[in-house]
Amino acid sequence: MKNTVWKYGLISGGVLAFFMILTFSIQGRGEEIDFSGGMLLGYVTMIISLSMVFVGVKSYRDNHLAGSISFDQSFKTGLLIALIASCIYVITWMLYSHFLAPDFMDQYYKYNLEQLQNSGADEEEISRQIALMEKYKEMYKNPFLKTGMTFLEIFPVGLIVALITAFILKKKTAAV
Image 1 (tube, one colour):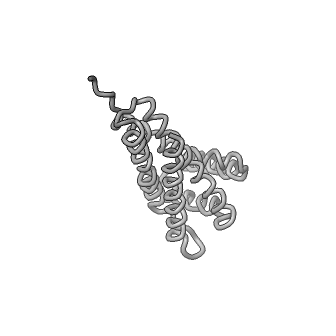
Image 2 (cartoon, rainbow, N blue to C red):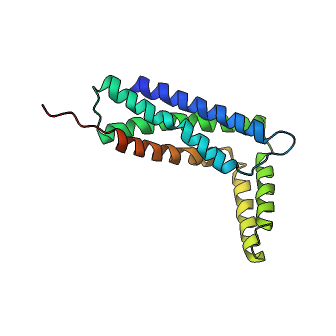
Image 3 (tube, rainbow, N blue to C red):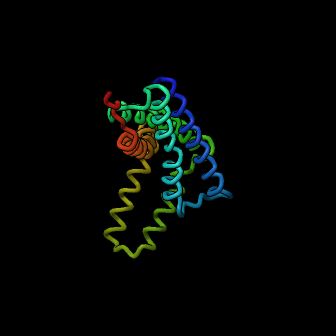
C-alpha cells in the first residue's frame, strides 16, 4: 500500500501545485489578482487533482488485493493519498504566497471589501464583516495559522473524495 499511496499522493499533489501556480499566473497578470470566479475554479481544480485518490485506491485494489477491498481499507488508502496531496498543496501555497504573492491577503481583503460594499448589505452587516476580515487578515500573518487555514481548504475536499471512493470501490471477496 505504501508505494501506491506515495505514487498517487505525489501525482495528485503535483497536479494541485501545477494548477495553483497556473491559476494564479493567469489571474494575477499585472499588479492585481483577479479573484472573480477564483473560488469555483479553485475547487474544480482540487476535485480534478484529487481524482487520483480514486485512481490510486482502484489501482491498489486491483493490483495488490486481487480485486477486493473493504470500505475501511479503501477509505484509509484514499485518506493517505489525500493527506500527501494536501501537504504538497500547503507547501506550494506557503512558498508561492511568501515569494511570489506576499501581498495576497491585502489584495484578497480589498477584493472582499469591494464585494461587500457593492452587495447592498446594511452598515451594521458591513461593519461586522469588516471586523471578521480584519481578524482573518491578522491571523494570516502567523505562519502556523496560515498553514492550518491552507490545509483546511484542501483536506476536507480530499476527505470527501476518499469517502465517496470507498463507497464506490469497496468489494467483498467472492464466496467460493
